[in-house]
Amino acid sequence: MQVNQLSVTNNYRVTNNKNINNRQQSFKGGGFLSCLGNANKGLMHFVERGGFFAEFCIMDMLGLVLPRVWQGFHRNKEELGHLNYQAGMEELLRESITGPSMFLIPIGAVILAGRMLGKATQIPTHILTKFSETFKSTAPTIVNQESKDMQKTFAGKLFDDLFTNAKDKLDVKNPAKTMAEYKQEFVSQLTDSIGTKFKWKEGRIRIDKFNDLIANINATFFDHAKRENTFAIPFSVRVRTSKDVKEYGTVARDLYEFARKYMEDVIPSTKLSIEKLTTKNASAVENIIRKLTEIRLNGRELLCIGGTAALAAFLSIIPRIYQLSKKNPALNGLEENKQEVSKC
Image 1 (spheres, rainbow, N blue to C red):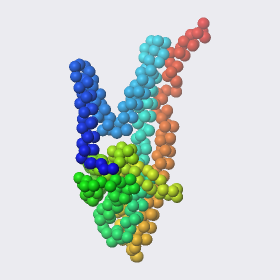
Image 2: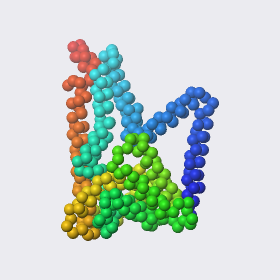
Image 3: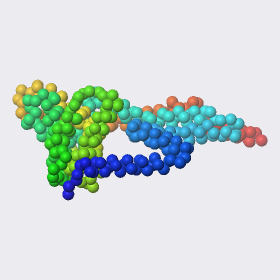
Image 4: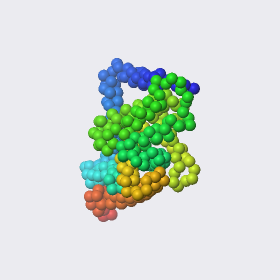
C-alpha cells in the first residue's frame, strides 16, 4: 500500500476547511446567532491554546464554582431576610482554592524537582526508559564526542528507532521527501538551540512545526489506521519493572519537549562523567547512562510521592483557610427559628 504525502496532507486540510466554512455559513442569516457562534468559536480557541488546565478551570468555574456560590448566597435567604453572605463567601473561597490547587501543587512539584534533580525527572517513566535505551545503543560512537555531537547522535538514533526501523513502515516508492531528508529535519528541530528558554509564542510555533513534520512522516510512510491520530508515535520499550517489551505511545508535542529535556540534562551529565573516566570505552559509557537514568527514575518516583503528599496536606488544611467562623453558615436563619419554636 502506498500513501501519497501531498494528497493525504492536502485532503486533510481541505476537509477541515470545508467543515469550518459550513459551520460559518450556518450562522449567516441572524446577527445574534452569528455573534453567538463567533463568541463560542473564540472561547474554544482560547481554551485550546490554554490546554487542559485552562479547560478544567473554565469548566470547573461554570459548572461547579458559580452554581455552588450562588446556592451558598441564597441558602436560607427567606429565613434570614437577606442573602447568606457568610455561606456564599465560604463557598467562593473553598471552590476557588480547591480546583486550581489540584493542578498548581503538582505542577509546582514538577518544576521544583526539575531544578533540583534534573529536567529528566519531568519525563514519564516509559519515555525516559526509551530515551536511555536509545542513548545507550550509541555508546560506541559517543565516547569521544562533545555534548552537541552527542545530542545529534542521540536524535538521529531516536529517529531510526521510531521511524526508519519501525515494523509497520510502508514501502513507499518515490516519496516527495526521503526518510533521510526527514531524519535530517527531525534532528535539526530537536537539537536547535538546546537549553534556550523560548517565549510562549515562539515555543508554540516550534511545536507546531514539529507536529507538521511528524504528520508528514506518518502520512508518507505509515498506515493511519495503525496510529491513534496524525501525531501519534508508537514505540516499544522494556520497562525496568518488567522483563517483557511493552508497547507505548506518545504525541509529537510531548516527544519534542521530553527529548529536549533529556538532551539538556542527561547528555551533558554523561559528558562530564566520561571526562572523569580513566578508561573510556562503550561499556563504561553504558554504565554511566544506566546510573544517570536510575537516578532520574528514582527522582521521578520521589516526585510522585512528594507531590501527592503535598497535595493531600494542602487539602487537609483548606478548611482553616476558607472557614470564616466556627459556626456552620448553612444553619444561619434556622437556629433562630428553632429557638423561637422552643420558646413557644
